[in-house]
Image (cartoon, rainbow, N blue to C red):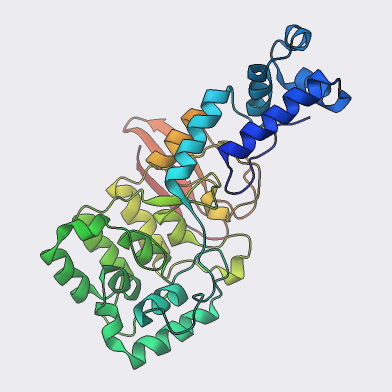
Length: 327
């Protein structure tokens, strides 16, 4: 029986209860539980002779693809730090949300209940209330209001790395996940992204969507096009962002952490931020070269070594996009 992926928003308490149930079932002679031990315990015969709770925890961890119970716990500690759930379609109490937050929710791709039709609603809202893009750094990044973002950062440079708004994201994520197209040269989410990076924003900013690994990152936002591709369009300046972010330090690699479920296509490979490194180490995994054939729609990264040194090659299917950058 193959190792299975963790559920969304995995809970360590639930896994502890699961291992206790396994311990009890094996001690009672349950055939399916004993078979699970034989499959996943490295010393199954000895373990079954006196099956302990520690044995049950080891089998539970290995059943989810982790080499040990402490590694599973380490992974869940990382998940707890970076987990993010898509917001509801509307606030619990109508009329209580600031208009700037509504604008952000409508304009930003979240892989939740978001639909491209919301961008037009965001556009109309900003047209009726142009001051919304100056409400805070998150609205400015979403709208691509370069002047407003520049003024805010000049007053408080720490805003480049702050989290907030209705999505709880850093400004760079707002700029990369925004699908708002400015009507003039003063509104550009690409230029706001450049400004934020110069101000110290982390190009590897990201989060674990409902606790899933790999993470969604700024580069994921640039590519868009998840499982529901036509309803999850790429950023208007996808290719430019795909050059800007790696040049600023976004690490590119193909990885195979504990996953196993379908995720938005572009979360599957192009970025390896610090949060994913931590999670992979918890799994006992290391970055490796991508397979020869990747799933349809999944960006792939390969490492090549030549006279000029090692480089990363990022390719996006269904486009002519191919990016090389220093590793």
